[in-house]
Length: 320
Image (cartoon, rainbow, N blue to C red; front, side):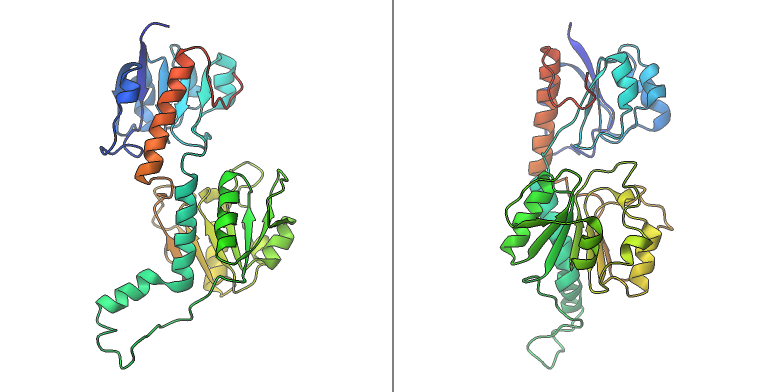
């Protein structure tokens, strides 16, 4: 292939200016758009053989309108933003970037859990408001503080991130159980059915991919089995939760707390029920976005493009 035309449709999230695009620039004629609205996707990708996207959708309509398209690189691990059937029919290679953010996602998983159990941010706010200065005691706290040692963590999805979460949980003294569609033996992890996990776990953490089958997995029926003292953590995909059911469980005292880095619609709608319910900690889908993780992301993305241009594509997700 002659020098490729390469277009990045939404580069800002992966590289807001603190990293370099030089590895991709070395591979062809590079154009980077910070963000691309849906109505400009085809115009901006027109004539490009190589298109990279993070969250800009490339559905059947867009794929059909881009006759020069030969390759789509997803700047993420999840690749539901691309129509795999349409690209496969056209012979367009689609790749992803696996495992680049595992350590960062694990870190945020426990940051959310620790905020729920020890309320570090909350107590820091109280200190800066003068509560400690005016306290008659050397120490104060305004809610129970929960120790993780000896509690049971239930992991849904036991891939790379789920296994890494299990290791950290074990280091904290937690017992670990897991429900997974792909059974695998992980030291110290007991495999159980989803229903048993819901009933036994003191903490439930989601680390599974989003599929048509598990959309709304955590719903009223699931929550009817959980302990009222349980915590729920979601750093996977927002639609795994039925957010109205989760908010109702929180407000009714049928869950102790929820920590999420992802929501069903991002950015969220103002009426998302999790934004206004009790004991819900929300971060803005940033678990993947440490500098180290984004640096790995760009390096692997460029390596994927180079492998494709060399005729030996890797990390292919659509079977082309």
